[in-house]
View 1 (cartoon, rainbow over the protein chains, first blue to last red):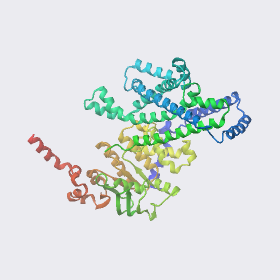
View 2: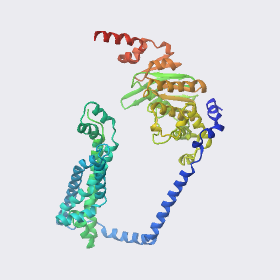
View 3: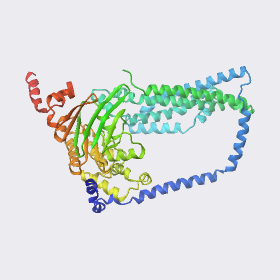
View 4: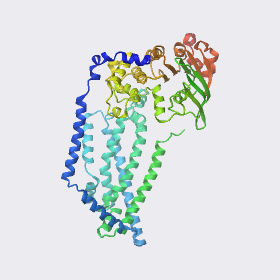
Length: 286
Length: 265
């Protein structure tokens, strides 16, 4: 046995008595883990039973799914005129996503700072901002679309407003969290050099959160392209309107063509935003 | 005996370590000095195999460790403990668990994943903390400790690995002088009492003179000095540090300089 091992083991008998907390098995903590895990499993089983979970129905449904897939082949717009129509609608969907996302991002900036604990010291203001954001966030894009359609009428304008409304709160929350976790040291550096409150935020915090926020905007734009398709179905304009129409009249080949269009668009956006994100996160100039 | 035989490390076009050869007998306390970017860290990381050499061979007791893989490599990590400048503890875990990381090689994965440490491992970890006078800190979260305390936790983690050699990469560069002394004293005690080989990168010449049996000087990836600390003359220092030499020299000459400035002011 090495000298080191000997020394480390020499006090073994007395150790447990000297530091009882370290050696007492933490039964309470382990019991809690078991209880939480057991509770989660029980909840799952209960949910599956009450929701009529039935493997046979999945199996039957899968067979029907292959029927539909067969009817979708090959995807076709049935003529140039309709393809052009689809193209315009796709452009509308992209416009809805872009407008909605950018409006939400711009409006979220002041709200994000208001909701950040390390920027706004006023507890009441902070609390009110947070709760307001929570309430807005709890309403889904689809519901917002239905609301805005009633306010401004059918069409893409309602769609852009719907996306903006549901994303403002999400953006503001993500931003306030980024601000709260930002490193305090640069802020102190600016403060110690005589920076005002606003200057501390501008030079101490903004450079830290800018890449995070920009990357979130790109991600939201991507995901909003999909959302804009869905809200089109309820009448907020764009390609979703055609998609729901073609499915309703069982024109599966046209529906498939529309789906492929959305798929390709989302893939392209994904590629472009990945490059943009990498460029933004990448090495600083100079 | 640790043998470094013609080892080089290339990062793209930059040669961090350039055909370096040196032998270190067991039980020696060796300091590696040189300016930032001289390749000291890269050398240590290659010995521990956190980095792989681009050329050359590293041997421990005649066994080539620079080409180990899998379980054999993990065993080498266990026998060759590493201490870092920034401590590299898991800040969100308590001190005891951090030290027990050093017992991972002695523990089955199932036990480790469920944190069901053996009684022996716990008492070894506590004994190590006790050796460094920080046993009462065992339940505290690692990131709530001061730098000096964190580095002592890191030394405990290294000790409980039951290593044969300890590598320390600028272990005191982030610490104040008093804590630096505590940490260096601990490394010296480990070296003297347990006969472990210690290889430590240092920035301060004073520390190298005070603690090391032997000093290696590196510049631009090459070994430019190898000898007793007493042989570190002004000329050698200038070769190692160039323009920065005055910053790492003994402070004995400083009062004169300061006095002159005050007098003219």
